[in-house]
Image (cartoon, rainbow over the protein chains, first blue to last red):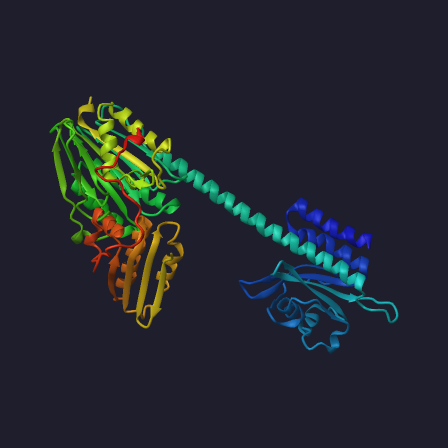
Length: 411
Length: 122
């Protein structure tokens, strides 16, 4: 028995070293059949994609690797379906014996032991040992022999299961690396805002990939700014985000009005995004020559305009988000505000829906925060507001993005 | 609380409830896309929704688009006040015609108001 166990142990060790269960079996199977006096052995893997059993490893005079047997056919098919060990002492009397395999290979099967290879309740394949020589009238497949074969089948199942887990981990690792890379790309697409342009912006992603974004482009005397929120999360949302940023830059570079930029972005996104993905956006243009700020709110929720006097108003959305409706139904309204002592607080729902003591702060909370920090510099006000999320005084479960426009900060 | 799609005859009833967000809409999207093209009427009931994010709104848009693809009718029979607020804020009330807003429903989270004391924040 010690030698048989050695064979199983060698198989497991070979698998551990190579990480390839078939290579390990190729090495173990010849030793096993030689030791227990069988003429041949084979392993059939149950391929659920093709509903066939495929011979992946064999030992003996004939190489049958690659042979395929439909589920339910032959003795291997019978054992794979029943998941019960099967001994056939004379194949002549077994109706399921596939004679065509013998005929094509020239191998003559006399007797065989077929074992299911399973892990927990999951069927992996079958192990088959053929033509055991027995002395006189002794059992062809005595119990010690069956136990060794069972041990090898268990080792094989364990190896297969480990291989599947390893593949899964490798795939997950690859996916994590992709997400990490996408996060790095996204970070690179998020610009640092120079001082003196008349606005500040910051973003706190809730997870590795954000669905929120902001961007800007300086074109002559104009500074175009966008804050957006893409529906959904993850890699798909981040790709849409990148597309929206490219569209924004393209149309802003052409010195379009905010309304035109929104119309053109909507048209492109409506054509490309397909089923139910959209982008809420607030687009502003700080025109240092004509000294006005123009803006369009496309489904982005309310924007706070806080006067130096403390009075405030909300800039409402004038159209659905970008990408949902076609051109004829998309009619955003552009608003114009002369330079003055006011600030615009543009937030995504990660901030407006953040909670203080279990209650959503809403626009009243934004108004309170903007009022509290109105005497701070633009950058200090932005940092202080985002610190409320960082310090968890405000609890959020979404990306949090803030853009503050302040024309008095233009240098 | 769960989100369901039930097909009965030529009608698909989509019921949204509780939290309708990125974590609860994955299977729902598959179920909506699997509705047979023989269905001639899609009905959404969102009267018991306590929270909806952009993924939830996207699901409502998906139902609308699947209905349009099948030349089927599309109706939102009822939404919770929370859903209506989101639709109005994003001007999606231009896209969705809602038949009624439930007077209550969805166990709405408390929201701060003008009289809320925000001094805890600072």
